[in-house]
Image (tube, rainbow, N blue to C red; front, side):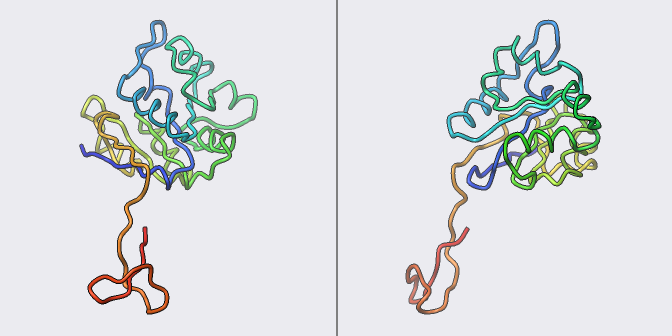
Length: 187
């Protein structure tokens, strides 16, 4: 597994699969690492959503006390009402992006299942993070189109801005001079 850096200035939103936030249904157990990321995103005003193909699955988020960390929730009942297919089709993620007012290419998807990773990939989402908590799905998640696979959301670092770098520029268009060369700051 690896560590991934998400540059928030390049993201319109982050869309989570419900099962990457909570485990179980009767007594919902939250993944603390994912809740930490949700809280950080909320503090930094990054829109968030939760998606599930199961009917009423997002109600578990209320039981777990994390629904308030999400701007949008889309579940199987919504998909049925709208006549949209579930995973591995990208419709649920696309609907969440639409409700957030975000472009799929500007969104990150967080998923722990092969079908969901495939949905994020085929839906044209900018970053698809596969979460392999058990350590046995990384290959399948990459094969399904994951941009990166992590073992925990603790492996995801949120950074406010993409680092700037100096790039050679033509005279008269420079932001600065470095080693007697005109340069501009670029991302």
